[in-house]
Length: 107
Image (tube, rainbow, N blue to C red; front, side):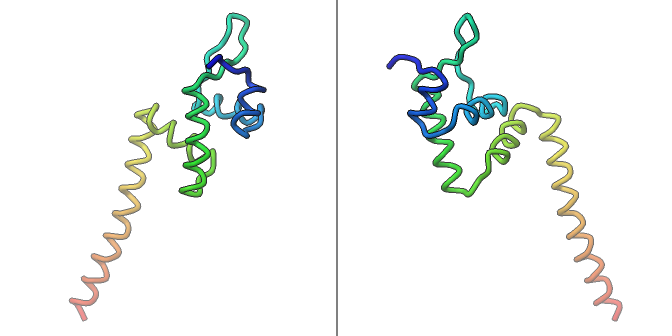
């Protein structure tokens, strides 16, 4: 299969050319470029676009959800910060339960 331009890829996949550009900016798909900078979509990129559409439908995801998930994989510092924050939300619930049990024992 020959590589497709952004317009051809949009027609083939059902995504708009503007959305294809956004997906690239978000790091969700990485089409090759010609020497003059035009995007080229091959079989790999078309399959990524199809599977992205399926993921969104199956799990009710927004593109921003997928973009954030991709950032978490690319940026270890961001992943560590989010993990720390999530661990803290669990601790708050645990501390609340501990205080509840202490109150019950004191009564």
